[in-house]
Length: 202
Ligand SMILES: O=C(O)CCC(=O)C(=O)O
Ligand SMILES: [Fe+2]
Image (cartoon, rainbow, N blue to C red):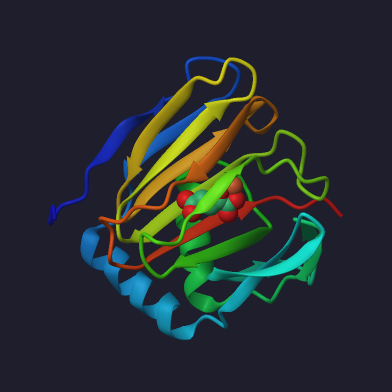
């Protein structure tokens, strides 16, 4: 583990075409990132995520908690969820992410992956409740994991490693043109928390 964070001076677009994904590197000091991880891990009201897959309601091992400015209802995977008021620790992280990315967000979906056995399958975050072409910022805490994008037409894959305390932002037509996923990994035994800050339209 690096004791000092490796933040990039100017973020780089890792996509070759049809969208913008800026990777900022580690925007938090490792000790602060660890502290935030522990606070969120022990304090958030984690729930299993639910989704409708092939007509059946399933519950994921991955846990989620969802926060927002208003008690928005948000539908994805055909299940409607309700946002909780911002937890204090989350608001501080939201301010950091807003400063770094120069964007505003009104909600946050927080994911907890207990180990590398849990991941997230190919998808894009193009739900109708989300602002069209709005930025989605992703802050990673805990175990480092691989993250991949796949172009919907030419199937090109771009992958990177999301380090503890790192920030990534998806913008523009990224959700229209690319899928993304968090592949499962047998090598990762430690938990990871990911925060995705989004803008929901009322
Ligand atoms: O855990 C991650 O890094 C990605 C999560 C994600 O894609 C999502 O919540 O839509
Ligand atoms: Fe996503």
